[in-house]
Amino acid sequence: MNVFITYSDKKYERAKRLALFAAKHFGKFDRCIGYSLEDIDPEFYKNHQDKTIYKTITNSLP
Image (cartoon, rainbow, N blue to C red):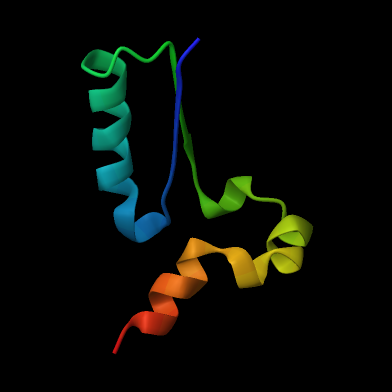
């Protein structure tokens, strides 16, 4: 089974929906899952904050 998983915050919600659509209809994935910040357990986020892509991206912005 091929599973496509993506994540976005509210700013990139539209891009997430497009990615899920493309994966489902053109990518031959059996299951497509889109996560948002609300789906991440606050305790998990707190414990792994230093490893998140979001932090890396936002820290590199001017």
